[in-house]
Structures are given as C-alpha cells and as structure tokens.
Length: 409
Image 1: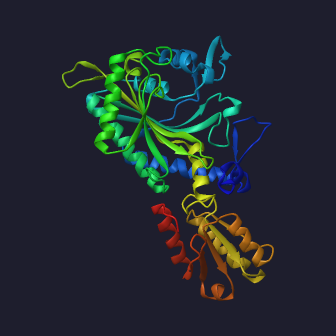
Image 2: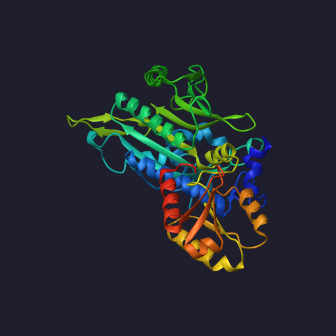
Image 3: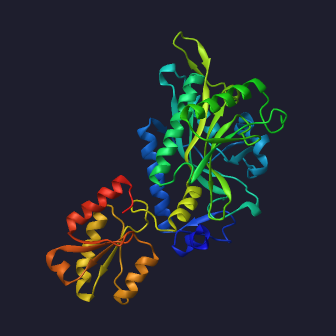
C-alpha cells in the first residue's frame, strides 16, 4: 500500500513536508496542502453553522492556572509543553480547548432559553507527543482541531446533542465517501472505577454517563464495541476509529460526555423558575484534527482528491504556441469564478498530459484551433476518462455545480 501512504504522497504531490530544522512533528504545508486544509476548514464551519454552532476564536495559550482549574494539568502535563514564564506568571500552549470555552461561557449569565449552546472553534492545539509516536500528519505536535463544546440544560438534552453530533459526523464522513462499517467503526470508551489516578472519582456519575451513551447507541441501532480504560479523565466517550493504509487504528474523531467540568467551572444556567441549575456538557469533534483527516483522505483517494477538495481543479492545456493567449483568457475566467486552474504550456503535449495525470488533477481543458475559434473547450474528466466539448460558460457552470455539491466528477 506504499502508493497510498500519505507520508510518501504528501511530499510528492507538493502538499506538505516535515522540515527537520523546524522540528519533528511540525508539518509544513505547501500552497497545495494549505488549499486542501482551507477547504476542509470551510466545510467544517459551513456545516456546523447550519446546525446552530456559534463559532468563536480563543487564544493558543493561557495561564497555567486555567489547566489546574480544569484538572488537565495533572492528567496531561506529560504531553503538554513546558510552562512559559513571563511577567511573574506561567503560561501554557494549550493542548485542548474546553477550558477556554468554559471561561467564555462564564463571561455572562445564561438562561435555559439559550441552551443547548453549541460553542465551536477551529482551534490550534499543541501536544508534546513522544518522538516514536510521530507519524506524518496522523500524529503531530501541533494541529487544528474541529472542536466544540455543547452546554446543555439536562441529561435528556445532552443525550439528544450526542446523537446530533453523531448525525453531523455521519453526514460529513458521507461527503468524503467514508462508510460506517467499511471505513470506520464506533467504540464506546469506558472508564475504570479502580483507577482513581487516571479518572475523576465519582462512581455513580460514571455508571450513569456510560449508560446514557450506551442507550444513545442502542437507540441509533449502531454496532459498537465497548472498551474499558479508554475514556477521558472527565467522562466516557464515543470514538470513531479508523485504520490507515498500514493497518494501524487511530481515533479520528470523538463525542464525549462530561460530568466533571460543570462542577469544576461552576457552569450554571437560570432555569424557568428563576433558580440556578447545573449545566451538562458534551465535547465533540466533527472531523477531528484537520491534519489527521487529511492523512486519511490522502490515503483513501491515493492523492486523487474529489473536485471540490483538489488543490488544482482544472489543468488548462493549450495545444500549441498559437493557443496560449486563449489559455490565459480561460485561466482568468476560471479564477474569476473561484475555480483553481493551472496552465500547462511548456514541453510537448504528451509530457504535459502525463504531468497532469501525475499531479492527479480532476479535469483537463484542452484548447486547440477548433476550440479557440468556437469559444469552446474540450473537457476530459480525469477520474472516469469521459470527454466532452462545451462552451466555456457551460463548462464553468458544470464545474461550479459539482464543486457546490461536493461530489467527485
């Protein structure tokens, strides 16, 4: 499966590389890779906003006190970067977003009418992974997480939000043509009552929350495996497990039930009767880390991304020198419609066609004498080999429709 390995394809296709002078586990995204990353991020924001998520932006670091308050520091300090001491205070590069989002919620009082409140963010996180664990984009030391925390008014509302998060995950994976049972599976990750060092100690809460997630999965009719000692320290979770081309399984995204943080942060809301009541919290990620999902998708598509995600969407090929001016006009028109083109005008036509295939560009527009005279383009669908001739405006419309639908061509 070497031909699908993202660690090989990423540099070959000009997507990313690891620069040892910059540091291990710190991927450098080249222009094409940055384009794929940007399209994934746009997809996340678009789909989440449709579902009522409130996207925010919070700092990449915070005072050490915040992570002591949340309990993350004692549990995760070995995978956190060392404190940065300045102005007589200690700051940490954040390994997770939840404490920031809880502080943001506490910024002002909230009514039951505002709940559930879905706080989302594309957050840059930093974790000191062991050198032996680092692998391409799948396991890195800095990454962008499609993160969210849903503040709920009741356990029933939290259960509904867990199911809603799974609906979102299944929708987004379907766009990538990732199928439940074939490309990924569900795992219900449980705590261990005897391990009070790793897990927040509250046996009754663990029993109740694990049962809540189990019932959500049964109600959805999903197959899932239960795994002891795989939970977060603050509660159980539903993990979406995927395998890379080498057969190694990783947690791609997750939905977590949190019975710990509402107490630690004193998260409350004003109930209908005017009293203050404790909130319930769901943590979730819609596509996980952008870097990790990119790794899975590079391997799934063997680098031949669907049209909407491809860094270069159209190769423009003038047959000869006389057609270069028209190729430039077509290039400009495609750019005007936010379609990503590249002109291949040097070398022989045969070499240029081979280069387009090597770069795995979805569509090719060929311009020769007939096309230049008629204002048309000869289109080759590089995914299925089909060819057609269309007027330029119709060809652009054909592309835009498929890009909007996020379908392959």
